Image (cartoon, rainbow, N blue to C red; front, side):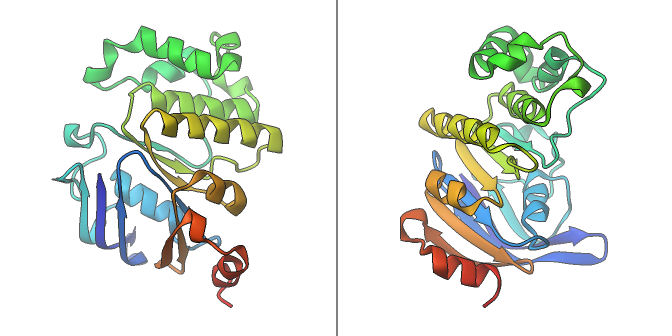
Length: 233
């Protein structure tokens, strides 16, 4: 579904990613772990088209999307849940969700998808007419996930969903991700909580200093080995 070959990218003249290669199969969960500054968020933004591809190739569903803008129709089906939620605080919860169906192909399905999101996150249904700015951190993250689901993406890029949230909310979000996987969604997850990531994932990738250190099946991960590699020991 997603094929990344020898990718380099970054911010202006500063290169962050160094020859990253990764293949992701449909219906799987791939977790990317690594220390702060490893380039994980930069990789997701580059895949999503928010940062320029300096070198290499990114193909999504056999289409070369590396040079395409994030709103290009050939990127349809690929969605990013960004770090820090990035919700529209001065809009209502429901209007935030509707923005997730902004693409023309999604607009005719707004009502049934709203119903689906409210079924997944009943707290959003209770707060649908409230401004998003008054939500708690956990509710705001639910809103970011729900907004993504409004376009019915086939592949979801998820950046640090547990950041700043209480454990009970984190567990609720990861249960949602597990259900998405059961419904055939493909997930690429960046997450600091290695234990939850490995439990959810089919494959685990370790990044450090802008490089992919290793990729292994989640069942083959040795936590002590992972932690040593995580810190460069």
